[in-house]
Image 1 (cartoon, helix red, strand yellow):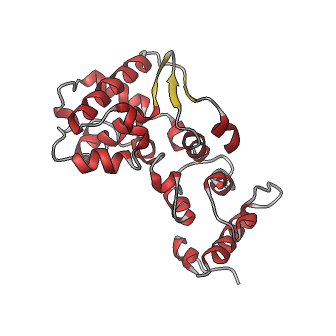
Image 2 (tube, rainbow, N blue to C red):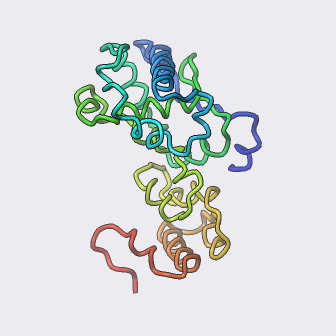
Length: 238
């Protein structure tokens, strides 16, 4: 799948149909307006966003002292935030397979209903919304997927120096098959020693796939750092 996305002229992401309230066009229009304004304020063009390693950290967070709070921006309206809450609540942003899909090709656009826009605008506005926690809570973004949309194309995920850290960052993403938390990201993992252990094999159980990922970490890194990523109080199997 990775090669398909890499060699495609463009990747088109389909979120789904419009809402009964016709939020799709409104949300896309607001994303365009907000992203144009944010880029102007920080002195970067929208076209240059695709070359930024981490849009949230390098564009939003780095300039947070000069950016107005979302609800204080000149475009802020109740209707705008309602449309954006609906837009960023799509589960696409939390799918683990979407990480590979959206990172394999820099020519990518997002479509919803009859409206569309560039992915980088979507990521920028998502980062802007989560910049201020009090705002995101009070305006109904708590259940939205802005965090996922903001980090999905960060360099830490797109070109990880440590693929274990990539797995850690994406551990909150969702998949119908738990094995896809490994297999859905396999194409982004570049390492020689132990890589064969993670080649997709759906004949293996979930436990076998996860065990293989631990073994791959032990072989590749030649240390036990992989055990630091465990959660809870469980002990390694004997």
